[in-house]
Image (cartoon, rainbow, N blue to C red; front, side, top):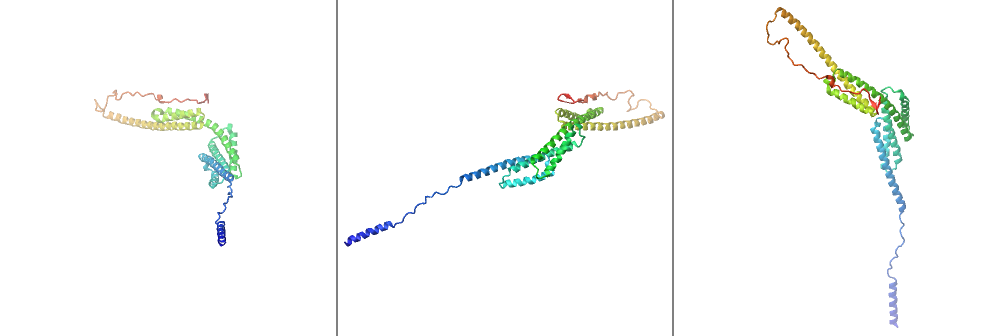
Amino acid sequence: MKKLAFFALSVFLILSLISCGSKKPAEDTTEPEAPAVEETIEETIEETVSGTNNDLALANMDAARQAAIDSGAQNYTEFDDLEALYASLKERADNGEDVADECAELAKKYEALAAYAKAAELKEKIDEHEVPLLVQDAYNKGCDDLYECEDLFADPDSKADDILAKATSAYASFKTVFTTMSKELAKSARDDALEAKKDADSVKAGVSQKKEYNRAAELFKKGDASYSMMGFESAYDYYSEACEIFEQLYLDIFDKRAAALAAIEAAKKSVEESAAVAEEADLESPLTGDVDGIEDEDAVLLEEDDYADPEDAEIYLEEDISIGGDAK
């Protein structure tokens, strides 16, 4: 009986120990929250698009700025104002801001200033001469547009499109005036060059100073080539340079010829005076027979010189010029 009780107690203790053993903690099967993938993708796309827009807008702005510099825009006070805005936009773009629209606006202002600079340069050239009546209205419009453009640049609230429209209009007007004026100026310069050439030919410049004479003739021909292609401004430059050379040749040769004639006259006078002295000496102490060092009266001392015709050195230049076959 005691053995049975002892055995039952042992079994009970063993079962108790098994039931009280270490239990593995239950695993946490709750899944973590997924990150907001869609929001992250959208933000990345927005940043990429913003950066791309900035890069393109900055490149266009830089190109417009360089074109303005090439046109001489940096010589105007308006350029300094645009440069301050340019530096600000570059800095903001470096900081990641979207400045594409502002860059596009500034690019147009640089473009407007380039047109303004070219218009102002043309006006300066035009003002050196009398404006032909045929294009007086175009000149007046160009002046009005130029002044309005300056006012728009001074107004910080002005739109770039408005400034660009005025600057472009001013340049177009002055271009019309200058083209018409250049044609008349070129034709006048051509006539002057032809007259100067005639003076140079009168003193045989083609013989005595052939190199410079030929250079002037070649410049004149280049002027004709430009004129026939409606390049009136370059034609004017060529004609003017040719005219200057022809005039200088005439003056140089004329002065040298005058100096030579004066020397000849002085020599003649000296010879006449010497002859008078010799005649008087001959009366007092006449020579008889041959004298060493004195040739016979009819002796030939030099061979006759056969000079080429100076007119053969002259270069023929057309009196008239034409555009597209029509005489002008």
